[in-house]
Image 1 (cartoon, helix red, strand yellow):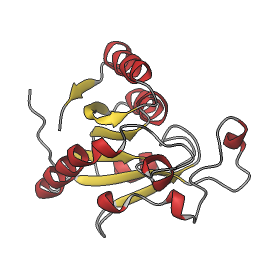
Image 2 (cartoon, one colour):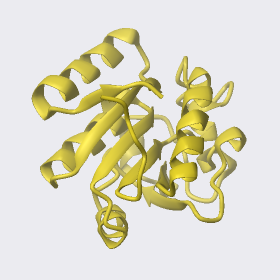
Image 3 (cartoon, one colour):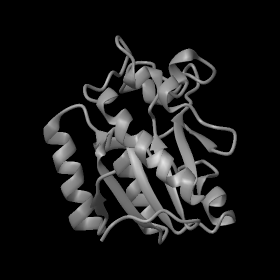
Image 4 (cartoon, helix red, strand yellow):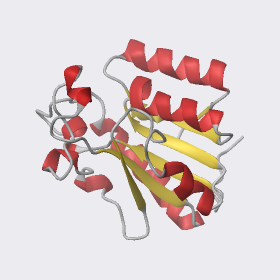
Length: 179
């Protein structure tokens, strides 16, 4: 079944930020740059169909508790916390800052989606096994249909990427697609 974007669908771009994608970034993800063409295709298809394009962006406090486990990254208001220029949001897009792995935890994501009558989410971005995975888990538990664009997500290792895709497909009944 081919993906058809419509007004009940949102393309979600997760953490495609300078601190994950840029060379020398504190949490550089090998392969993140290669996702850009597929994400751009998805964005164009979504916008042409009148679908929502939504960004989930890490936006940490300078002393965020997450930095106990990870190097400081995506601190609110810094260059590292900005979406990479090649995927920059357009005025009609929605940006939802987050401080934890799931885009739903402690954010307005669910409210933003329900106000727009969004029922289906197409997830893209980084990291497949962390923020993409945790957002997918919460979305499924909140009764959204979830699709993951397997050619538009990446993890730190191929093993982590493959494991997360298997978990999402088998346990969450997420549909894996390509953009």
